[in-house]
Image (cartoon, rainbow, N blue to C red; front, top):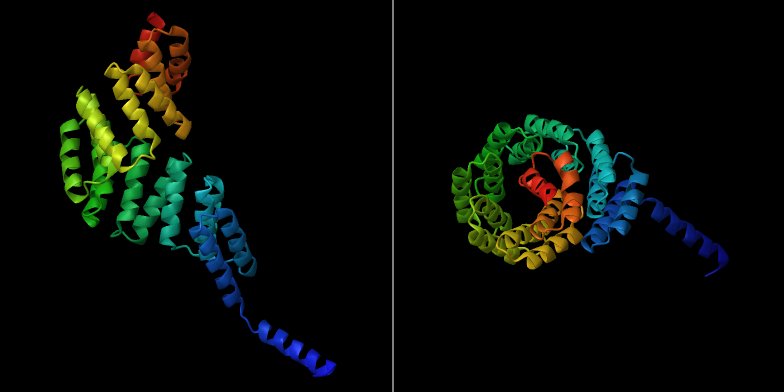
Length: 310
């Protein structure tokens, strides 16, 4: 084969390569990103999604998947930004609106989550997700009657979803309607007895009713089903404090803080520990700020007053 033939062959190969459409190329980048996401490598996934977006700046699916990669990295602002871009290019992108609403909740932007819930309900009032998001945002805004109604509607649309029943029970718990909450949890347990949040909430209700041993049994069941939740350990630590097993309780509360350093209930429980052990300085250090920032949190005012009286 002579030089001219080689050049002609190279040109032919290049020409054939150029026939590869933008749609094909961006689709391959999307698939490569998805593979990296499945391999738990969100940073590499983001690079591939960016390549897809470079080929098509209106590629809604690439923005959505990129947002999910940012979410794995706990980068909420970036998650919300990419979901907003996906929605910008596909205004009726239901799942993107739903995920953005959940991300708004995690980011403390409760009114924006409520707006996304309303948008979802307008798009499809028969889909449980819009009502679920409405319930979550109502719960965060402490509009408990509206939250309960939204969760009930969601549950009617998806009766086999035990989470929706647990959410109803949670709202009833906040309203101190313990008997009604336990009745809902009994229904949830029939649907899915292996739901850990169900048993954790049951433990919180039993603690509020001063059934400490029952509370401990219930939270142990939750931990058996899911040992990766910081607030389960925190709750168990609290119950152990009140059962007189203070050092065991403190160990679990500290473990909870290591897993989630942003949970104010864990610092409240640590303050309670120091009240119980007579350490006034440490107790006030933990409870004073909570009394100012979370005045309605259960047990805070009571134990802050006890700390001051030590």
